[in-house]
Image 1: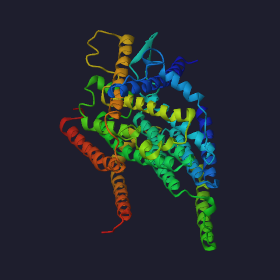
Image 2: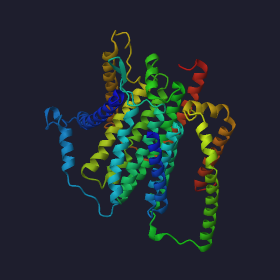
Image 3: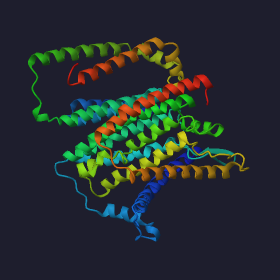
Image 4: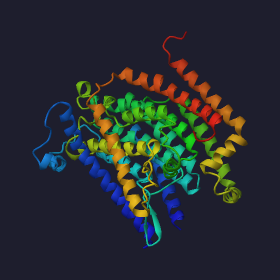
Length: 167
Length: 343
């Protein structure tokens, strides 16, 4: 019963703050709303007993990536009066891209009846650190290591690009 | 009401009150210690040995005129110190403050919640703690405040990395993320500082940087930034920022004592012939003694070492502590392979 109330509360917070992020004129408010959205989603992970995912979600997204977003926005000190107008061509493209995304999301929503059943049937302890670690390092070792190499490559690339003199 | 739930609520209130009380008397202790190190007397007017000084300071903070800069973002300006204080008080819930108290055959653990991701919870709260400073610095609409806030955020992100990696080596040995379990393991074996001396050194340096204490107090370095991120703050909002720093210091001392120095355990505790509640109370006292020693080290360092330069701070974090922490993980792995899981 309490879980159900928590679910509705977190869903409300997540959707409301996501909307606030899009509609807010001040970019700093947008970032803060997005952080609130992340917290609500982490709460949902907790409800699904995926504690590790929830904690990492907070540490990585809310704690590190959004700090950098906020950092950049504060450094640039964006002012809504100085926002440059997008060209008509650009607007047309963004509408098309957004429409495609909506199409994909609607296709998922249409299938939700089948999906909810499988989500309930999963092992309720699968999100705990021990089980997750065992699955990651036994069954999915190769994809896991490949993903980490991909991240390493991205990091090296970022460092290389940020160097002033390309050697 | 369920007695366990009632007990947890009482324990929450007690931990909160003790954190605030110790933080208040840490301000007194810091001024007394600074006075001793600089051959002065220190606060001695309010009460015997100046013991009422924290109360006098608190009243002063509340009575001061409150200024909110006209060009500031009012909502975020007020939100920032509240958030900073909130995150400072949140970490105390996962720390085991002692053994268990047994009343009528029911054992009540001296830990508010022993979640099995305790360490990750700590890291998470630490990583969101920076928002209080960032929002406050930005909302003040002052260049010095913004500089202080940006310094604080980049410093905290940089040292979080080394701190997390130092903890990974510890977690490899403990095999658990629960702080209660880590404290219990040190009852059976030695304190983890024996196995992880380098990890502890990295952790304590990062703790200094995360709490913005000297020699890492660049976010508020008064010689270049006036007052850093809290330049525009006055009255109790300033008090919250200063006070939260002391709470953070208290909590990180408690974390260090729990993770590396045996928590509430002390040597030969089972040979004393004490049982149950008496032993638990002594254990809690021992834990607080350990915490006080760490708090003393925090203050001792502040009044002994000069402040770093900003590039030195970044070099230390990324080019010294990070490789050291990685090497520590590597050697911990080799050690565990050669000597088995523990030792």
